[in-house]
Image (cartoon, rainbow, N blue to C red; front, side):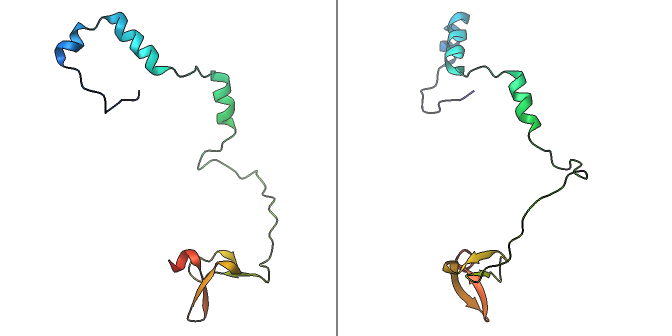
Length: 101
């Protein structure tokens, strides 16, 4: 439940004077979140794999593209970047703009 920390705090005698119906009405107004159907939630959860799950029967199909002429491999992060990301060279090795910062 969200709390408004900017709202003035109630004193103990104010809390005791609130009726049960008034407190329930405030809670209903504050929650205001729609009900979630359990079947939809379970269906969404089935789409995700948990860490450590057995993936031995799964097969990856990824096409590996070789580095292009206008790309370089950063000598610090070892990622392939476009030459527009070349910031500096460290002992003749290319360094990307992210690692040069």
